[in-house]
Length: 195
Image 1 (spheres, one colour):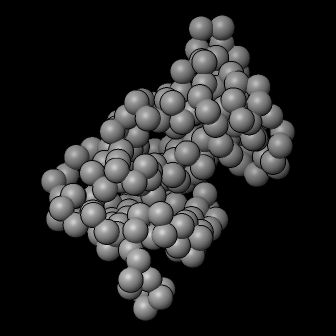
Image 2 (image 1 turned 180 degrees about the vertical axis):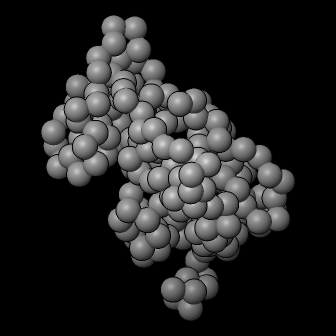
């Protein structure tokens, strides 16, 4: 792509190329393989970081500022958004319930729809398996979903849920772990989700 756009690296052209050719590859089936280790998150985020650096007018900005100027979400934030969309679709029976989440949804007048019966596991028994389980979609789903306010998780249409979720996510800093940048816990990272 670089040979073809040497003369035109405007944000409009480059973002269109990125969204069309690169990002779909980075996000394909992300609910299945979503990384949990910081090094893996950094490696994937580095693709977007390097690409946005090549856009005209972005050479003076750091990665986080480039995301803001270009109105892009980090890839980590997009994976979290996809997970929340999948949970909403599972709750409304729009997708198969492959992780048995549906029986665990409970309505609460004040908190909206919550996932109950958080899976229990013994960390001390087998640390490696406990970490794998903790980082699995089924477990992370509880953490992500239960942090949503009632006005978001009780939306009845997909469009209203996407809109409300977008407003909710915009209220958090989007600062994924990136090599060469100070370590800042992303507000929506698993470290800050209350279980």
